[in-house]
Length: 234
Image (cartoon, helix red, strand yellow):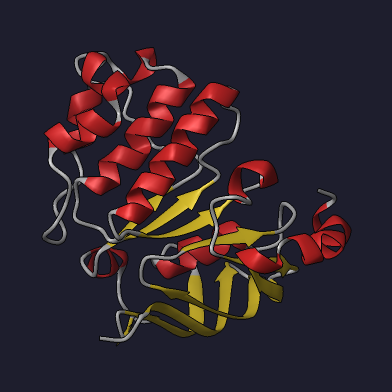
């Protein structure tokens, strides 16, 4: 079995007439945490949305587990074991925390049980009957991540999961990503919070104007800090 789970080649994506991605190339290996870095508007979120088929149109190649998905609909892509956690979280206010958790269908075998999820996120167990609107921002983010773990997805696309959260919650999310990696999950992170993302990633891709402009490994992070300062202002 190849170690490569996701391969993107020459990816272009549009919203209407707006051409957002211009020939993106990247790979993600099984069990890796890969972080997409870049300023707002660089194309990082659009890359995640293109992977799951949620952009207006796309061209190029996106292979998941060796299967070409560029012409597949979002529900068929999800059934290849892909889970997407969007920045806006998408918690349904009229449903309880547990009803939100149970809402997505199981798309592949090997998903985490509700008991396992509650062990990983004990706050959600305590708030299982609370309406979505009564959850704190941190609890909503935990629920958004937990919801895709139940589905059986093994490739997790996480968009700005630390945004606007208290440091103690951000630390809990970092622990969660480390635990998920230990369980064999493959994770692509889009993060503006460099201090959160930097220790977690095996590899980094830097995006600017809808293109990948640099890539490097965790061991090369220190020697790339001057470059990151130039591109990101970190």
